[in-house]
Image 1 (cartoon, rainbow, N blue to C red):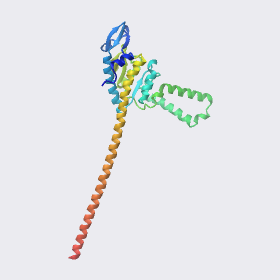
Image 2 (cartoon, rainbow, N blue to C red):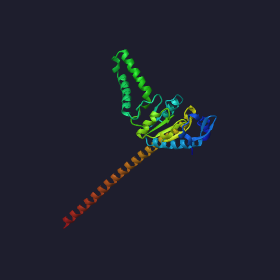
Image 3 (cartoon, rainbow, N blue to C red):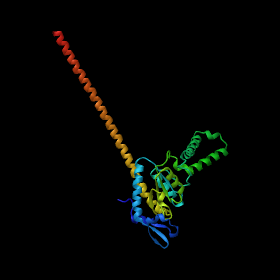
Image 4 (cartoon, one colour):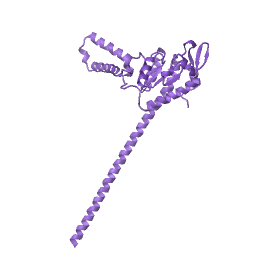
Length: 278
């Protein structure tokens, strides 16, 4: 069964593309028609592509890997932040830090710096500094929190990138392509889909459109996370069962050994008795 439907996408305005003169010819397979100089996206293809992307995202979440959400445009910022946080995934909504993927160790240093500032503030190390120095440090901390706070838990490179507007976030897409990280993207009629592994043709300028697509994808990821949790519980239960089985086998082996010793002892006693009688 599809995770979304034609009517829901139509109501959200996912079918509106850009002006005909701004189109990218590579998006031709996903365009249904042109009306009043505006391209209309084929929502039947959008439904199929959302299902395909959602299934892949579910498998990534099920395997315990991270998906990095990227949306720096005003209309999508808050929606992406809320949806990504709901499935405990990292996101970038302020500004894409150049080299975040290709130069990941340096970005990690900046995140560690933020953690160090917090640690030194809590243990009273900064209490002896002047007001001006404390103000400078707090400003630096606020700047780091704004740009990198949402990726503080990202200890290694993400397994996938989910991009809203691949044209605006072209640096992020290029970095992911260079490292072989799969890219999921909401692609409008003015964008190039060739560098995107999982294309979702839809309107990337409307908040409602982005929200409907993210709802479907995040629901699939939530399912993957729940399945992972259930599998973990089953494995733990199976492990305990095997441990108990092993204990039973060991105790049985001990009992068998003690029985054998008792039989041997009785046989030895019988031989001694026979010798004495003889």
